[in-house]
Image 1 (cartoon, rainbow, N blue to C red):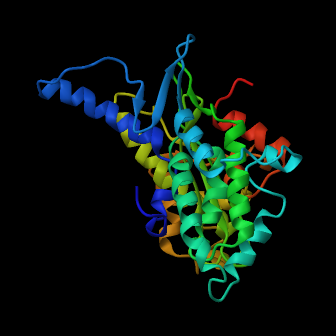
Image 2 (cartoon, rainbow, N blue to C red):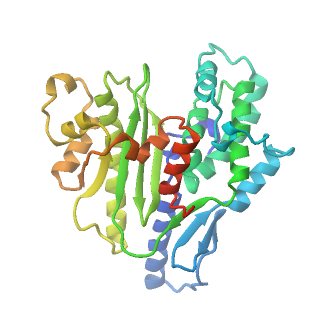
Length: 329
């Protein structure tokens, strides 16, 4: 694993299941081309555990890894169970992050190493099988050089949440399924946050939560930037599935809750308002024209990518978690 201070934006995306799909393809090509031994169904890969359920579903989780994290960083046990502990962040989460970022110089240099150790450990779970902690971990990554006691407390919130949900993971259902993506952006005064998730077999296959590099001048611009980031993952996954014999029969769905962003994805009717936007952020339009994706409009309440852009209340958080991770209860 990279040192947390060197973690790139790409590493902050969830790609655990995608890597496992790539390894599946590698295995079958290897059996065809080389003299190798197949030791049977996989039950563990780099700390990612695999459960084969009675209904034919497959669950990926990191229960043993999570237990080790809790034992290491919460030796006295999780924080007292309160309403704010039902989600992996406190009610003051964004205030604490922004206060840390506002420091001209690190005020608590002695906290840098313990803070980075915590974030580096959480990063592996957040990018492998735990999209439910992707947003808080991404936000905390911005403060690796400027930790505060309040942010260490926020780490304790994440670990306490994990302690109460150690067995949570991604459950992929049996049967045919199509790729289904969702994109969203939280428009902010400075750098907005992009969030996206792509589902396959009823659970998240890849996801992302990232601060945008440029300052968006409108919600439409922020949404287009997020859509283009999601499109890159969608196009990659379409090629990956085609390589394992599961090619998509037509354009893949990548939904947004911004009507204006959807319109811009299909034609440049808002050119006067969008001509300043970097060309790379119109990648989504190229893929629509190439019939790689389609961009349906969904209500904000139905856009599960919202899960990766802002702190949600407990009811919204767990409702979206059930969909993203395909949880039965």
